[in-house]
Length: 312
Image 1 (cartoon, one colour):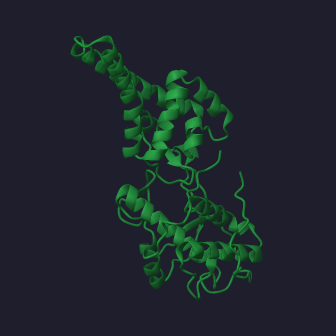
Image 2: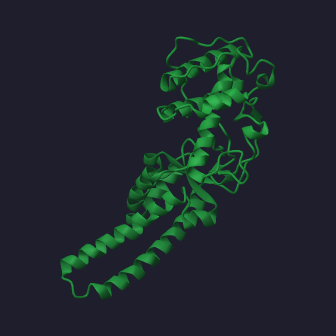
Image 3: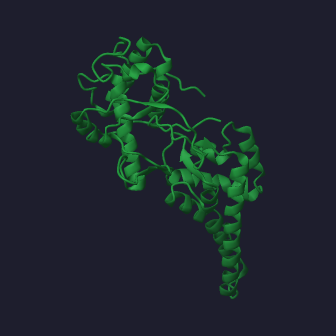
């Protein structure tokens, strides 16, 4: 079973949830939502007894939409992907790049869930989950999300980049990453995760092209004396810290900080660099964070696109 890798190239050790656990979570959520709907409907019946039939029908429809669709969307948004059923089953909804979901993701999932779960009694959702390699229903496909199992960490060895120098950390803190598209983060994640499997020269050239792409988005070039791959790892580590700060109110490395429901150990502040799975032994060699490639690869200047296609 595949593990989840975040957009910051960090293996969270989480596994995509399968149909049985997701079905159990849905049953719990449906029991709560239908119970709430019945109670609210009974209360409204006494309050709308004097209204005409059209008004009563409008109130009934509004109540159904609010309880069955609106409230679940709000709960998933505020809880960052954990409804009551998912909380009981140890599941969470994440973006495909491993980040916490936002309102638009919950809105798409909720709207599609009204069709494939509520109106079809879960038949469409079950078929889609069985067909999908990662157990995704149609709402997950359209929203770009994935339901994972938080309570089953999978052991995997990871190799850490050397921590960036203090002066580089200060520059990264002032870096504007708002214009960097999600597709670029996904490409970098795939590249860093498989860099150890690439030829050193190919990996060095690809890191240079990715760094050139980043310069086009941010207007900031790779600092002199820093190897492009180490700079990319530092940048995605900075984005990871910002995601954790925005979603959970605590930066990575802070005591008690969590990311996607997982406790995060001390980060750069404790002398550890961004963790990248699958990196080869060249990572730890002298000169990795300097201005030369572990295998003598070039910087790939002048290229605007990598041509790197993430594997399916």
